[in-house]
Image 1 (tube, rainbow, N blue to C red):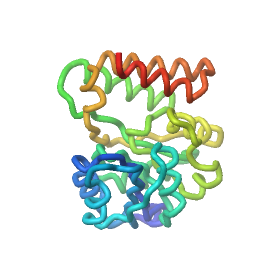
Image 2: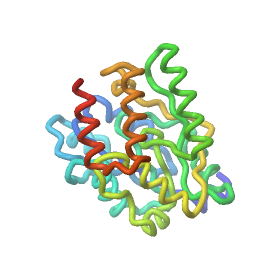
Image 3: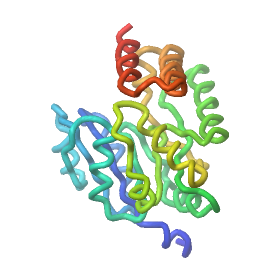
Length: 235
């Protein structure tokens, strides 16, 4: 490990959960590395065995009202690492994630980072979607939460954490961070479950997501966007 790595690390990983017993073991076991100080699972009223499994895996387990923003803020408030890494419960980090984090955050002008995204689904539509995600993340500096956002804990505190909104909390956080620097994208990808795209299909899911983002850019309040999202998921 280089001196730069030693300055940046250790890492606190925060995983918001709700009924994620089927996915959590693989996610936590991949995340357990020497440079990781702690893994904090923040549960939002699961009715399955998520909390029990998280304890068995040796993580710190908290409870918080459901909602990713609230859950991640609760975990961050307890975290002790220099770096906070926000990880979805159905997402696997790359094997070299600690080195990648250190490399990205050591770049001049970088205030936060994320990984590239691979989706655990076959097909040409998924391949095209991943290319679009890469372009959005790299050129617009706008990765989403499923790409495992990471940043210095002090910086997270300075900006007040995730906005307490029901949707697009990751976008709102990064827009705030971009006022003081750039968002770096690691060379390695996380692998996220394809369940979100599989439910409604890749094309329909992508159109819904883009519609929500367009509504945000046009100034539609997050609560109304959440209602639109729920309706779209049912149609």
